[in-house]
Length: 257
Image 1: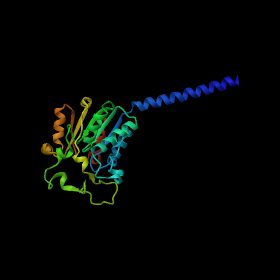
Image 2: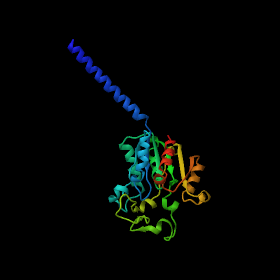
Image 3: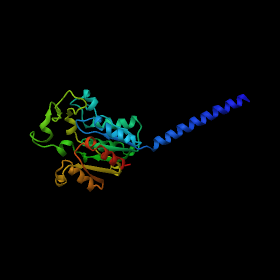
Image 4: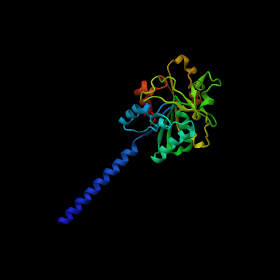
């Protein structure tokens, strides 16, 4: 009789443990997974608070830092090109075995998420361009946003193969923006998978002056997104809403589920 009671007890514990595991997996599966790709000169640190707020709301958030930037700035090298940054995100998805992702790209990050979606379209639930570059095949950041003269645009701040963040005054402060490899800006994007164009996409344009919205650097990409029938959103704020408009940005991202 004692043996039967002990056996029954073990069976009950096993059933309870199995139920808890199943419930945990089901709960985890129901969570929305965001992956946020930061912009040039920056790092995942810029979206730390964004991620924290999204997690509080029951989401899962990944924030890969692109090679040579943020906490990986010790790896900075002029040989780092666009494909290296694409691989940073692709490999995060593959090694973390992620799927059904809402992939968010800020600014330069738009180049990266476009190529990632081209490589792994079946893993992406939605693309969100946050005041970001929206490229076509064969285009580069420089061809889209650069100027022909060294006195203008990105070329004005190039030194020794890097584009310098001229706005950074204290180079000993952390966290901070850091020099960005010029090669990532001149490399052309290679897009060849038509399945990428089937992914639902949203474009969020930030602006500070409604009257001057058409002069905004990212307005051409917003206009292109409209032509492609993306969901489009006009957001009042500067280029970095993750810093000054955190709550509003998180609310917008929540609506993209």
